[in-house]
Image (tube, rainbow, N blue to C red; front, side):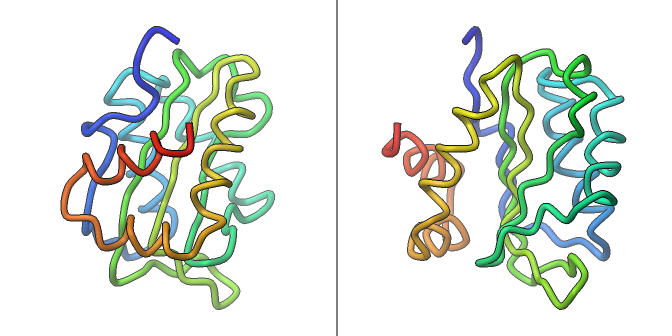
Length: 145
């Protein structure tokens, strides 16, 4: 990989959103603004959410683009956003941790498995939600490497 998948520039702590659309646009915007995807990808993330919710349980959602969004991905990247107040993802599901992903080629599967390992432990989710610095989150993801 030519650049870091997760950096302090793609992590935002203690954000607040009124709607899941706003939250997804924000997470996608972090990926776009840091050179991982182009603008089209954000629309594909919203499209994916309409097809099936990216809510994973444990207050976690993993917004990502549809299958045909691959051409909008420049580099594999992750954005992590904590939302202490939570944002309604429909169906009574509240999301406090958003992890936006964009994968180049087959790399998204590797990234997803890393995220799954981190998020399978409730204490890891708590650690992320309670993190006071971007580096704490980067360290947690690096531990599962």
